[in-house]
Length: 173
Length: 198
Length: 210
Image (cartoon, rainbow over all chains, first blue to last red):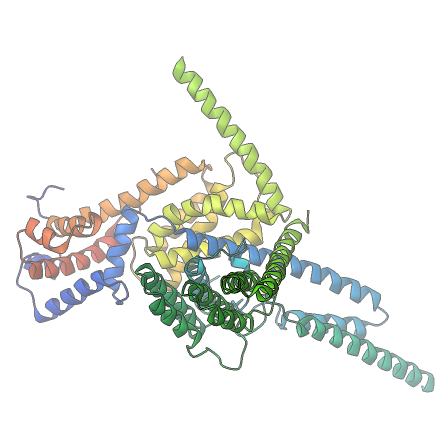
């Protein structure tokens, strides 16, 4: 759109014009935005929106440490899923073996489910990340001089887990 | 009626015995938590993250100071990590333990650059108290321990203490072998899991 | 003639890549950890940069979403049936759904409204799947078209302020000079431009695929 063709004004800012004198409130908000743009740790929805605009236009690539941590976490889930499948198969064998009475079979199912998953409601509790070894984040023995990179990877991975826990508690699947 | 009561009592006793066995089975599955068990321990929270972030910042600060030749300053940054208040005191948090183990390993490395072999050994010993499980963290500490003993051997040679040098070299070889054993156990576990369902 | 030969070579390479990916997917579905890791590493960065980041508007949110995408891939890969264009279209659909869930949960203005993304997800279910390169190009064009549409619906002075300061990432003083105002006045202009941007985003029509 050419600069000498302003759109018809529709709300207050446009009635006033982009260069109209600022109110005290606008000056304060403008200053808050300026500070937030310079310092990403300052919370500001306006600054977040501007960063979103920039990222839509020119997305930044995913940091390698973050990618490594996310892949490692996914592979850990894969390991846990395999373990759950095996555990379920063992549970079926136990019930068949002790199938002499319906009460024993039902009791066996309840005890096994509670014992292995801590869950009586069939998995409707949100699946939250618990503390655990960070070994799964690393594929190779450690080298000297790489402690900072390891600390970065651990912090990134667990930060992602913490956010995931928040989403899970909000009911986002 | 009597026969029914007898049969009921027999079935009840059988059910209780079986239940007792199964409860024991279920408890056993949780009685030996491994560092790789995804469902043990408290839920991850901001207190734990704060510690991990502090550790991360400490390492970066140490990088900067080490880069300018300020080894004591770098050690100070790492000491801040190991002396920081622990999240959830009284509970074992694997991430915290492993972070401490790695910080001690780095401290040992830095002390060696100053020629402080005794201090480096103390750091390794302290680090090993936080890395009891066979992980790369424990393997790395054993590697550092082996390097510390190598340096002790070299110092002993320079000082003409041949017997001590020989003893330190032997110890270094044993420690580095232990480090390799630990790494191989970790690698073997990973490969075993990958091929398990082929 | 040379162009035709080049094209044929490219087609043969592509066919080989697809065959290799098909085998890798099969191994991952059978529980091969390494194969799964390779699939995620190959496609994750593109899903992040082209699908999640533009729609969620923040690196932290996009990383969270990518983690969730990986989790869903691990849980559901056994339900994937191989298509001639590879696994990327399926991964992209998973990523769009995760992005939609997170947009609904966040309730903040970003470039995509949840409703617009929901329409996009619905379209995906009936669209012909395309390969990753074409898909990524379309996603980039869609994102840029959204940006241009929003800038086109506001006063040009606001649009210029946003372009120079945000899209071109020029320093504040330089942009103020370009707009012939003081830096403090530019701060107010930028603040007003953000308000105009919020309004423009709610007015933007659904920008379809290219």
